[in-house]
Amino acid sequence: MPDSWLSRSRPQGDRLPPGQRLTAKFPVLHAGEVPDVDPADWRFVGRGLVEEPLELTLDEFKALPVRDMTADIHCVTGWSKFETSWRGVTGREVVRRCRPKTEARYVLVDAPDGWSTNLPLSDLDRDDVLFAWEYDGRPLEAVHGGPLRLVVPHLYFWKSAKWVTGLEFLAEDRPGYWERGGYHMRGDPWKEQRYRDGLD
Image (tube, rainbow, N blue to C red):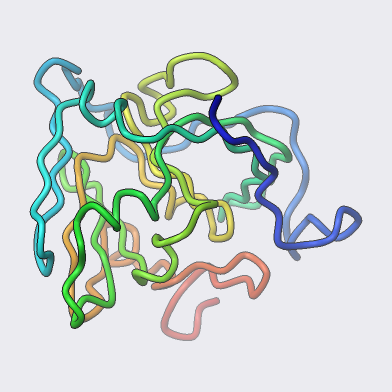
């Protein structure tokens, strides 16, 4: 039976970060078209500064140890949704299988059509970060990032990249799609790290 827990770093009465408003909906936000991903052709690739390069089909990825997670999520546009439910594989499990080299400090999360985001390795190598293929007990819809999305609940939700196809492990930080457009390199909602270069 998969483990289940509530990913929450704040007390029950202090769960809404500054500048956020609570919603019961799950807004769909992305730039451009939803990629047309054939699950039969999908591959997850772990590359870069790793001892064990990884390449998995979707079925092989789903055969990794599974976790259920309930987490609050916070979008940079100002909405937050409490207690969202996900199923997938922890970031820590994927990192463990790739065996990053000692010089690896960051990851670039890959997705089709240039949709990428960057994370410090320490923000990925956690049991409360998930590569998810189910939301609320159902297969993850393409508009929400299916067949696989990253869920990083302690950072703004753009860091929870949709349509994930792998990771590149890096020695130095490299901006992803939204970060190149001016979004913050880390994106902590409790510090309102929305934008870079003095804009946040």
